[in-house]
Image (cartoon, rainbow over all chains, first blue to last red):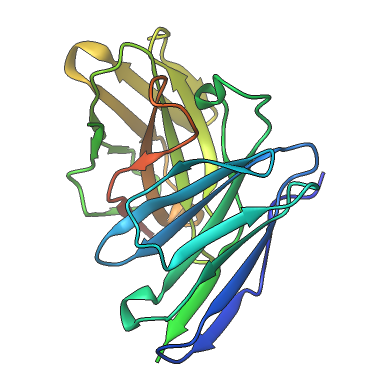
Length: 117
Length: 116
């Protein structure tokens, strides 16, 4: 079974631009979560989508948004990029059928490395 | 609020040495889940183990073993006879039953360097 895939793997943008990152979960997985990893803040939860609905959101500004499609694929968008948005963005999927999903394991993709100049 | 502390920033060992990575967590929930992930230089987080708060049985899997102690809120990870391929950043993470969703709270990670 294929793992979580993320595209693109590397991206360079300039301040003020916007970017869209894509994540395809493991087949059969319906929950997709996004995390940001930076040297200063570590791994931080951005948001989680399940059945095309945002179910949980981390403490990030509104410039960070996401969505999930009917096939469970997810995209996240960052508008008006800032230098501090340079990070590794990781997507994770889990099977979960609804509530109680905390006990299940999230499987991560390889990430998208975003550099904002 | 939940919190995960990995006090060891970096550990260097010589191949074949045993090494233990420490993890201490804080949570108000009575039901929670603990995880260890490994992040090699490629960046992908690789799942290693999951433990439920109601299951304190320790586990050994090959060269890996885990010691979960609720009394001290610790979930330590030991690699026996370390190898160069074990070099990576190791993250401990916590997920609570309450609050809904699938948020993982990660520690700051421990960089393990295994040298010949």
